[in-house]
Image (cartoon, rainbow, N blue to C red; front, side, top):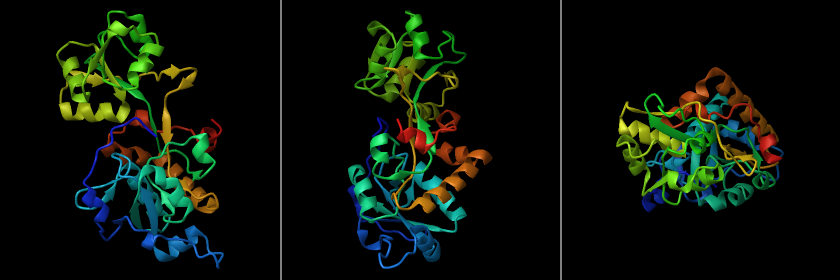
Amino acid sequence: MKKLFTYSLSLMLVLVVVGCSSQVTNSPTNANAENPTTQESTLEKAKKQGFITVGFANENPYAYATPDGKLTGEAVEVARVILKNMGINEMNGVLTEFGSLIPGLKAKRFDIITAGMFVNPERSKEVAFANPEYSIGEAIAVKKGNPLNLHSYADMASNKKSKIAVMVGAIENDYLLKSGVAKDQIVTVPDQPSAISALQAGRVDAVTMTGPSLQAMLVSSKDDKIERVMDFKQPEIDGKSVKGYGAAAFRKEDTSFKEAFNEELDKLKKSGKLLEILKPFGFTEQELPGAMTADQLASG
């Protein structure tokens, strides 16, 4: 799905059930399945009941259960605000494996997928995605002031003296090589903190990883002598941008629900509220989805 920073939580979370607006369960018994004998839509039923059931896969920072059982994450909090604005005040969470999210939605174990799922043509044949709420691309950090004037992988390829730290096994290694960066410019490190340490020590001129991962590393480093390059140009590999877009997903028949969700999401984008919701989870303005739509992503 995404090459991102998944943090494992205790298996005990599967058994946790909490009340209020953040109920988490691994049982389908509380799923808000539609009654096939009526014409009441999922949206109408949710508004009447005041709650909705959502599927998530315990993947930080998109959707996960905290040690005390609270359901949170960027996808959850975006959906929480939108649903409240629609008159649906509570969300009950159904924890499942990521690969079971789409089958679970179609089987009516839950009514929305709030897992930060990437929108692509294959998935769009199975479910109806809302418009994206975030984007994920690559990012770089450099010494304060960006002394080598690095704003893209192409800049790194042009400056053969530049050294770039990349975590071992990370896809960024392939992206750099395909962008023309020489193999001897790439310094492999065991983990993300080691990349930041290499930059701080002057062993490399830049570090690269996905945007939220880098942002989290910079925040934890508390070092004002290094900075993120905010006008970084996303690489294109084999003629395609590496940027991905995540969104909530609905059943194909729940068109009115998806459209109402999109209307409220658009309001959050225009007001600036969307960025406020995303920021605590390591997202910046670089991770905003812009004008990209689910239809565009579905067509490839």
